[in-house]
Length: 336
Image 1: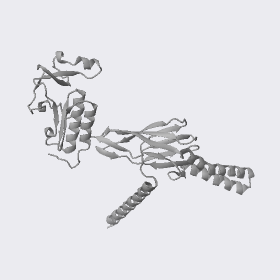
Image 2 (image 1 turned 30 degrees about the vertical axis):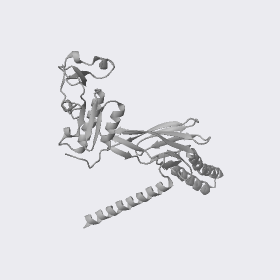
Image 3 (image 1 turned 90 degrees about the horizontal axis):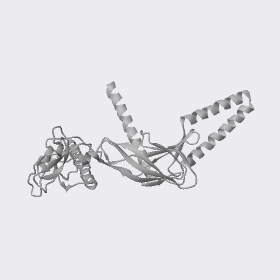
Image 4 (image 1 turned 90 degrees about the vertical axis):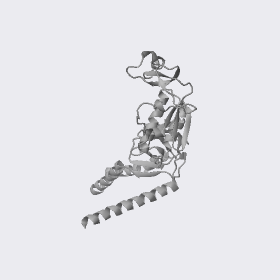
């Protein structure tokens, strides 16, 4: 019976915490709506004493008790001076962030399991400098910058990404404890940051050369002694040195062997059905690894997934199209 009561109490507390968080987020969305450009002002900033500030306040109280108890005018004068400092500091801390403009410049795509990077530009809207400003996605450390010159300052923030697809970033915490560290002024800014996250590459073995087809859907056979150049493959022990891609190796790339084929108009197809029997996310990760491998080998390739097909090609734009199709593939997709 005691276990049931304890569980109910924990459940009630978690529900209450979730309700408070939802109300807090709704209030933030009304007060600080998402926008790609935000200028901080009195409606977007909050100021409170830090732990050091509370200790400073306690010191003032102790000095006041000491001065009044012993009727020491010097101690009382020190108390009045410290009180004046304590009253003025929050104004300066607030002014250090007020007027700071934040603008989202660029969001880079990333692979699942890696860090997504967002470039943010900070600039002054007045003559006042902004010193010791920290931007972060908690609990990440973020960046600490000073905006003193009139030129905009660029900051790159990193966020760990776990799942593929479109991932919306949480609010950015902007904080400063300048000048004395006794008060902190902060804001929660939503710059409408959204990451495109590709599947995490997982090797599925060598490229599926046997699945390459031409315009007539005829199988293309690869060999080391054919007439037509078909592409590059990773060098393996035993490959003829005559077929080594020495030009690419001299350019700083890995060691590859040239492959030749009997057909002259064939292309490599990376097909969903080649990975039958594997889980959906595993298939996407395997296809992602094949796309990257085909690009490294400079082989024209096409991509076939349920409901979509990408014609064979090569290059950065084609790579991005293929990876985007894999990233946005529905979670409840075909799994067999």
